[in-house]
Image 1 (cartoon, rainbow, N blue to C red):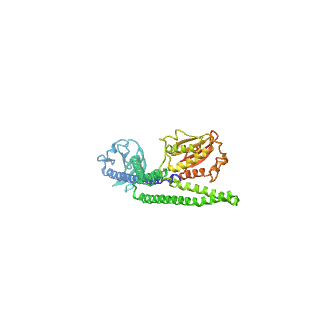
Image 2 (cartoon, one colour; image 1 turned 60 degrees about the vertical axis):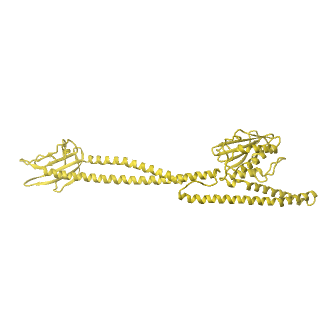
Image 3 (cartoon, helix red, strand yellow; image 1 turned 60 degrees about the horizontal axis):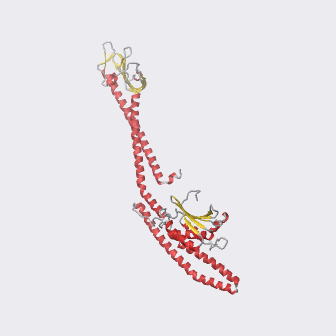
Length: 455
């Protein structure tokens, strides 16, 4: 639930849903109450008018029995069991009923007051809204006038209105929700475009955010573009300065190393000379490592173009075959496919990683090295497999340390794997060592999120 409401769209949609539900619910409730009140009032006023009309039309015949001078104006009182009834009673005389009351009778208890009273009573066809009053007759028993309407008729009118109102308000709620969803969709389109531009930055397909955005988003985009440009300038200046510093240290370090070698050759102060040489080699390694890192465009991850493996692999293979004569470097068809997806890296950085991995494989391979390329969506994987003796599992991670070298005449400076991994990690990737099916070592460069268990 917390993850769901971390989305602004979900929050806005939930707010619209709640607001529409509350608004439509309040409108439904108030409309039903208001309509019911008006209909009930109309029924009551109509019954009061009819009972007065009934009294006005009533006359007594010669025997003192009540009769009507003419029928009531509402024809429903003449339809059998229509739900509209009237009754006139006079103690000691014959009662008069409406033609609609073909069975049963109305309770005259409500008609024992000169004032018009009403209540709900049982009638011929169910509960009825009953009105009645009493009128005195000079020198004789009073007349009791009762008129009634089935309560179900009133409830049926209210129920019909409620059904139609519910239908139309449901359609209105759906329309409001649809319009709210449309507003959210249209309103968030600039954010979608902004997310796409930022994704392009991360993939290395752009170096700034471009496009036309609303003023509210433009206030974010413009400073961000300025920051990206300024950051690129600072990083480039830092790379140049660091490179210059590293190169400026090479000359005095070369002098120190040369003097240490001379002392060692003379045999004088050999212990001091050994220390000088050892420390000089360490310094040289650190300079080489950091110089390679400074040259890396990894700091520009997200602001560089992509590169196709097929474009840089053949020259690297040719160079490696010259450096390691007698070793065969073979690339699979996927690695040399010019239509294969590109890698979101700087070409020099990819060359730096692959040259170190290929050189390392060439040093330890017995006869051959294979380069394979696999891709799955945004994930890219380059596997370099050699047929050498392999690396024990407990030593594989240690091989990425600065200065870590294998034992034997093929050991290098101990920088290649460290540089390769660091540059790869600048791009959100990694380099790992594993056992090859042939028993040698497979060095894998991974860029992007590779499917779990398929590394």
